[in-house]
Length: 228
Image (tube, helix red, strand yellow):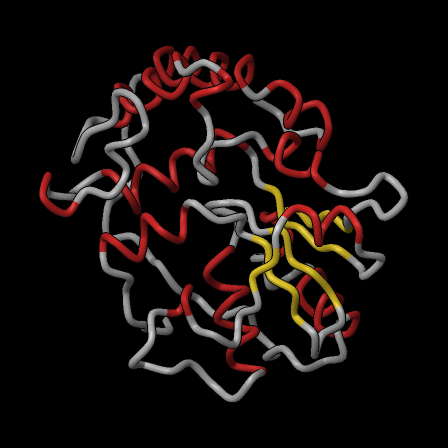
């Protein structure tokens, strides 16, 4: 697993205020990054292709990553690439990496209504489900269908499913490498591995939560054909 310098709390909050879109000139494409959808792994791969990860600079703020705004994305004719993930799995990954096990003074997502450090998974999901659409502004919880609305319909994005991208038995990562000039490493870098185990719940309770997440993120499930 690759290691990289973490952002400070201030850097993290600043990063979350900008669109998470990167124009990779060498690869001839724009990545529309969606939180918990191989975001950090692909950025690490880009930096590997650009000479390697700088251990003295937080990965997400490395100046070799050229962040662009929504206007650029809307007006460009450069190929746009995005990775999507089943919402329930995406939210679980967010909880395991960004909520569970964090101490209050280190917690970076207190601006999401109702969230607090080390909250239980069931409570976390309930809080997310209760959010109004206008409260869902963080890149980690915004529905993928909403994020992708910023593109020009004349230049629709190439959408890759997370579960196929990270599966070594699929050709998705290799096809992405070839489509962007074969500069990326042969294997998708593995970063942000959580030490928090997946939550264990009674089957009926888990299914109820899955159903509610499905209802909250119905557009994503319908668009990419995931099961509950």
